[in-house]
Length: 170
Image (tube, rainbow, N blue to C red; front, side, top):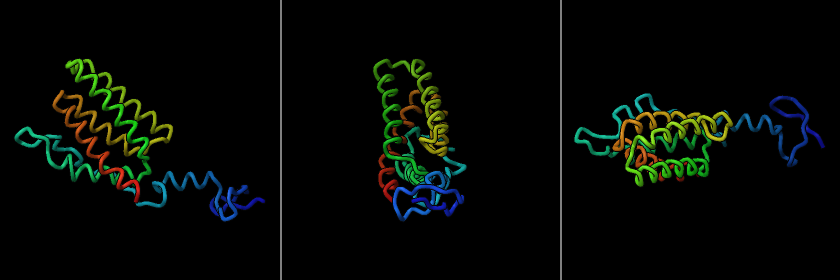
C-alpha cells in the first residue's frame, strides 16, 4: 500500500500503517529539529572565553559544572548520540594516555590536529552535529597551548560527558 507524503507530496511505502511522511522527509525533520522536536541551542559567543583557569591558575569550577551542563544540553538538543560522544571522548583519552606515557607534549600535538579533523569528517557525514565541531574546535585550540591546557580540556570533556547522558534522555 502506498501513501502520499504530507511533507513533499511524493508517493512512498510506509513501514507502518500510521506513517504519514516519507523516510527522506523524516530524516530532514530530525536533522533540522535536533531529533524528536527538541529546541536547538547554540554554544554561547563567550564560551570558554576565560579559558580553563581562574586568576590563581586553578581549573575554573564552571568547566566542571555550569559550562559543562550548557554544552551537554546543546549537544543533546542537536541530536548527538551518547555513543558518538563517548567514541570521541575515548579518542581524547587515548591522546592523554600517549602524553602520560611519553611526557612529550609536542609529540601529541599532531594527534590533537587529527582529532579535530576526525570530528569535521564525522560532521560532513552527518554522524555528529556541527555544534560538536564548534565545541571541539574551541577546546582543541585551547588544548594545543600546552600540557596544563590539555589537562583542562580532558577535565572539561569528561564533565560534559557526565552531564550529557541526562540531557540526551530528555
